[in-house]
Every structure is written in structure tokens, then in C-alpha cells.
Length: 360
Image (cartoon, rainbow, N blue to C red):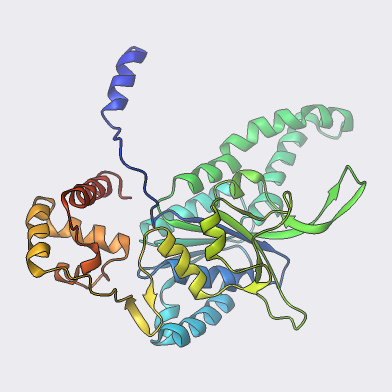
């Protein structure tokens, strides 16, 4: 087959569509020193952006995720209502002990995706970079194989060793994080790194990782504790080079100001910004939108036009958007999501077809 035929075949798979921010595949990062509250903050954020369904957790910290999940469940029960144990049951955990091969993290992500987790917390990304059996250990093992104890030769072959190892380990993890259809929350430990320009460590802490991971996130914040030892206080607007980032002013506006604690409301704001519908703070369930005057006749006409797609697809689409809870029927379709003109109806049908074809 020649290249032109391949291009023509690929064109059949592609679809041009209007730009739209999606409530799926959110990438978000937190970093900080041990004890700063990263794990609990990640749990709070994950509940805020996941109105329904399971939240996965890849734990590389000696099964300490159970403490964070217990705290988050207690906070969620008080904020949203409901039973604490039911909130805890929304979390599905995979524990990974050394060796922290990046491919083990890829396997964990895929397992949690298959289990139906809509959001996955990766509390292991520093470990699979520089802890036992992580990428740096794998690279050192390749240097050992190529150069043994010859220090000069080890320096010469370092780049070659990385070229042999990185594409098949760390880069596979980066690729998976880019391609996953679940929301991913990236957690990193932090430290003061040596600055060769100043010949001393920096005065600030940055994530222990390789930049390919935080590059995938729409925002990354530093999390730290206050003078009383209470954690969860965030910084998203920092000087360049200090690890924090945000990709759009509206994202920064939805996040806590520097030094403020991250809350469920901030996660909910991010979900709204991406087109989703968060939970009500008075108990589990979609937020009730104000009546827009949609008549039953307009809604009936909408369902008549959507009938060829089938009820199962429409329910899955609405659940993915956060418009319906998993146990709600199509007649609960919110009035605010009923198209009011031909253009809006065409856009809705296009979105449904995109979801049918891609799952997003």
C-alpha cells in the first residue's frame, strides 16, 4: 500500500467538529513535601470532578491511601450528605510495592479503566521515576551492562542507555497518561533541587519527576501544610520554573488563591468549567438547574429526533456528561440540556455521534 492510500484510509476515520471543552479526560497535578496533604487534596478534587461512578487509586506509598480515603469520605459525607462508608466504597485501590517499574503503573491504570473508574489518582509517579526499580534504576542497570565499573565509559554511554530504556518504560507511561479516557490526578513528591547556575540548592521545592508528565496537565499546584500542621493549602500561580502551572486564565480563576485550602467547591468548579454537572452540596445527585421554560413538547421532539441512537447510548452519553445519575431514566434529562433551536440540536447530535464513535 502506498502512502497516499494510507492517508485516504486515515481520512475516513477523522471527523471535523466544533471546539468544545470536555468533562472527560481531565489531567491535574499536585506536588509537595511529605505531610503537606497531597493525597487528601487529590481525593477532594477527585470527588469534586466525579459526580458518579468509581474513583481509582494507584497507591505506591505503602498502602497509606486508606488514611486519605477515610478522611475524604468523612469530609464528603459532611459536605454532600450520605453515609461515610458508601463514600469510601466509591474508591477502588491498587497497591504497588517495589519494584516501581513504570509499566506496572500502566498495567494498574488499564486495570482500573477496565473496572470502570472515571477518575484515577496516581499516587506513585515519583516512585516510578527515582525509587527502587523505577526508571532511573532501570537506566542505571543498562549503564552497568554497557560499561561496568569504568567511570569514564559510564559517562559516555549514559545517553545511549537512556535511549535504550526510556522509550519502552517511562515514555509508555507518559503515552498512557496522554491517551487514557479517564480523568487522571497526578501526584508527585517534591524537593529542593541543586541549581548548577547558583552552585547551591534552590530555595523552593519542585516535583520529583520528568517534565513529560506535568506537561499533560491543565493545572499543577504545590500543596503544603500551615504552621499548625494542617495540610491542603495550594499554590497554582508561582514564578516560572517552580513547578506550578495553569493553561488558561479561567482555570486559575476556578482554583484556590495562593495559600488557600483546596475544597470540593474547587473541584466542582473545574468540572463545570469542562461542561459537567457536579453534585449538590445537600446530598448525592445532580445539581438542580433552574427552569428555563422548556415545554414537554420541545423535549418530546428532541427524543423523537434522537430515537435512532437508542436509549442505551443516550443514557450513557448523558451519564458521561454528568446530566443523569446512573440509575435515572431518560425522562429525567435536564431541561437546561434540551436544544432550543436547530443549531443546538445539530450540535447535540454531533456530540452524541462523537461519543458513540470515540467514547468521549
